[in-house]
Image 1: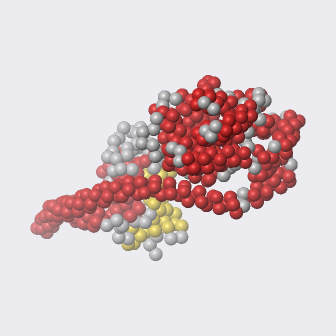
Image 2: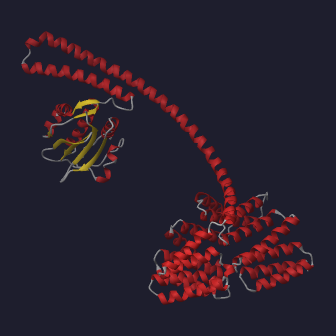
Image 3: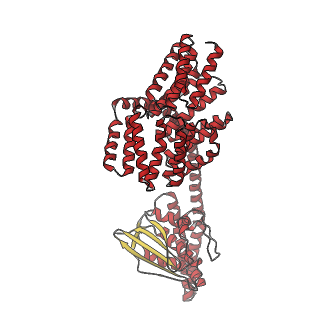
Length: 591
């Protein structure tokens, strides 16, 4: 056989195979015979590769495909062929394992193909296409095995190669594979969107069989989404395409999808007829269907018919056939290879985490320095604030003692208020400073009646200006911090008066005791807080729009929540019909 004749013979065989022409087998045998006679190793190897691919894709004949693939593998090993041919053989073997549902073995061989093709320093265009095919295969297998993050990376690599080659067909196949990934993730609407985007370009699918497979995907997705009219349309188109020269077993998939549609839409006679034809094809060509696939088909179709007893019978067989020792051994071996890939990615992620951790430690050191500075500032500020207060208190006390007998009763009362206010301010500064130094409040029994009375006294001027009324029921003793509780109640009552359009703002404090907890309620008749904003108001600097036009700092309610949580309590907001809000505060009861 001349070199020209050999090249032409291989080109003809590739063309026949790509169109799934039944003449492929006969022509391949003739080409193989001539190549063996001429001792043309390269033609023999290429013929074995093409026939292995043909028996996988066109005939679904796994044993025959394996036979030719292993012959190709043997010749490649004996003749030390280049990395590209080795990778092509490994990828074909991967596809055969995929056809027989041995996905771990398939991934193992795709990984081997990737390792082999990477031996090329500068791949040419044909070798780039091969690299693309390998990444596409790996992406689909990783998705099937649930390795979704890895699958996404492999798919991105395949798509990048397709765009680099400026190959519209390769881009379309990437999109179809991504759609199948979405189906595996039950994201059927997103898968359908991709299928419909690809549909106008389906002419790039070179054979009726490939176009039929595409319609099978459409039919299956429409069925899952309950769009049975569209599912029937594409199922029938697929079936028609499979009848134009494809192997009879290729009709099983569209008939399977159509039977499910017909059962769903009440066309039982049509569905039963298709199921009968499917079972006849399975019985007639058993070599094309593994035992697991046969059991799955029968189980699913009997269930669709409503024959659940027979469906369960075959489903039980699926469980039994899925754990044979040989398959388990293959699975464990290939899982180890998959684990190596995962370990490499984990090492990369560990390096990234180490870098992030170092950055976080640096920020933590900076934060510690800032906190130290803040505590120093708080101590200085506390001293600077308390010193004038001590002077005021001291001199007011001396003044009171000297002129007390000359003051009227009201003036004596005012003098007492001034001295008492300065002393309470001094105490408050000390307590706030101590609270700032620790994460938790120092809890002790606190009389809420005293706290409520103090808040009313402090807010007397504001209440008078707004014509507000603040009332409370007899209140219990709780475990808390009196200064922080005063801040809480005073802040909430202040807001209730400010954000209020009533002629007379009314605020009432009540409680319910529940075992060792006290549920305090502070209700008002103000403008209220929308339910969607009730969580947000407790965030730092978060202001909520209101009808009164009053503005705030966005700090008050943040401080309220922080104080309550430091006292081992919790706080939330409810509506107060017909208008207003109720602040609910849960605190531990003092025993």
